[in-house]
Image (cartoon, rainbow, N blue to C red):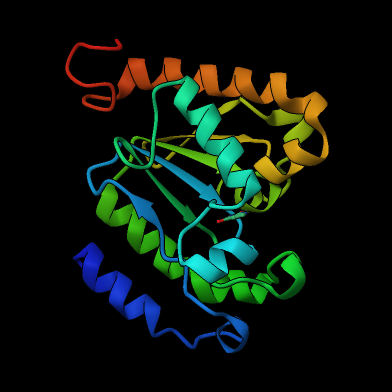
Length: 196
Ligand code: URA
């Protein structure tokens, strides 16, 4: 456990714990505010993220930012976004179990430092790793689970919504559920009064 987010980032940027380090351009550590009560977790960087070093900046990321904006959340103001693996899997394949295992310590350390009240898993890979191994997005999206005092929910991955736009309304409902949960249990995400 490293007890400072900036130090953890610097350590992570040097990581060679799995083969993804050999093909990456940038490590994608995470982005957002350090006192975030809400954390969003994706599976791993894609091409644009690998090139820029920031999570969710491609087309999927732009869609994600719009959905977040609709519920008064943004990476610049009140949330933190990270991934299960910090380096891009070649051809955007799913990260292998051993790559996830090699990398998950960084995410666990991020969670220990940020101590979020809410974690939203974007897509199957994150939900199966963090909520339960048999999580099914189509059946269990938007359902809240409590784990170690943290409220957790899985929803559609933005890339899946780009491929299947007919799931967008269901995904948006999940984000409205997220807004409700924030209003219920967060202290400063929506400010002291405004937005509550
Ligand atoms: N997909 C992810 O899961 N994470 C990113 O950062 C970008 C695309």
